[in-house]
Amino acid sequence: MKNFDVKDFEVNGLVYGPRKVLVIAELGTAHGGDPVKAGELIAAAAEAGADCIKFQMVYADEILHPKTGEVPLPGGRISLYERFRQLERSPDFYAELKARTEALGLLFLCTPFGPRSLRELSRLQPALLKIASPELNYTRLLKEAAACRIPLLLSSGVSRLSDIEDALSIVHDEWALQGGPSHAVCLMHCITSYPAPETEYNLKVLQSLSAVFGVSAGLSDHSLDPELVPGLAAALGAAAIEKHFCLSRSDPGLDDPIALPPPDFKRMTAAIRRASAADTETFIGELARERGEALVEAVLGSGVKRLAPSEKANYERTNRSIHALRDIAPGETITAGTIRVLRTEKILHPGLPPAWEDRILGRVARTFIPAGEGIRFEDI
Picture (tube, rainbow, N blue to C red):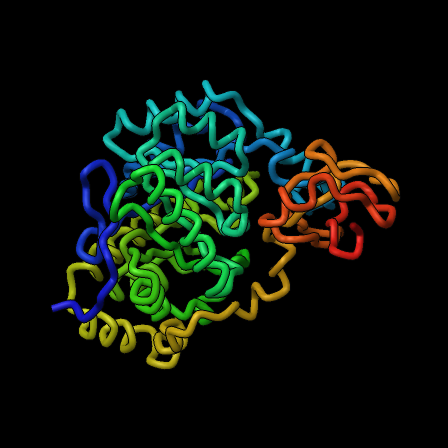
């Protein structure tokens, strides 16, 4: 018998939970905007055992300010904003990906990053939506996503318990108004670090989160080992497990260096199925004998939700805050056209939380606010 208490998660009448884990291949933007490459990735992920294929609908101006900084890529350093711009595609592109995915009997999942991409995705009628960790505090996006009445995966990387509580409250309040679905939230434990150290995963938090918030819990895994973290997560009752997928780690996708190629993803899927069918203590004991008791205990952790050491520096920089779209002069009235809720990321400074978006409209700038910078209390 399993000895966990993690809730189930329902999608299209199918129930996923500790005995039937939803295995998600996160393709993200690994297709590079090429429908042929996308088709190859979908087919390979299906062959490797995925139940669900996940993509990201990217519009750069929903995510970042152009001044956010650069990232190193094999061809040299490039503006992160421009890299996202290169990955922008029309809704028709995603409609084709959805058709290809569902033709193989798999669930189509996609992440929106703002109101525009959410509206376009909702018109495609996906089986479920995913809110990425940096958007867990994006109040407007959470409300509009909940209003779609589609099952939600909420990723909880680089977050505190209070952030998770706020996000779930927004979703449940909106569903209470809209008559939203039941058993339709899965909280995805995550560490926002690439790659994420296996020993920081604190997987016992899956049971803690499910018990505290009364929702199903899963794992969005950025570690490199295909079996250790996913297998233990399944043993502890994860309802869903997500892992980046690639054809080769040498491919040029943003996440390909930390993704699993097909043979490793197949190993992961087998480990998940084996763990979910086994007695928890027996599986953990066998893994401890194979990999070392100290390692397994470190991965399991205490079950207390805290920021992992490798992601602490990202808190408030990866998350969303209110930024100036252009230079705002002292004495100028702040309007919807002068601000946006964005990720801070590399070289800019965070601003007020997204919940303040409507409350600062109509206020007057006290100081000069440079384009891209976060807007603070002292600025208005």
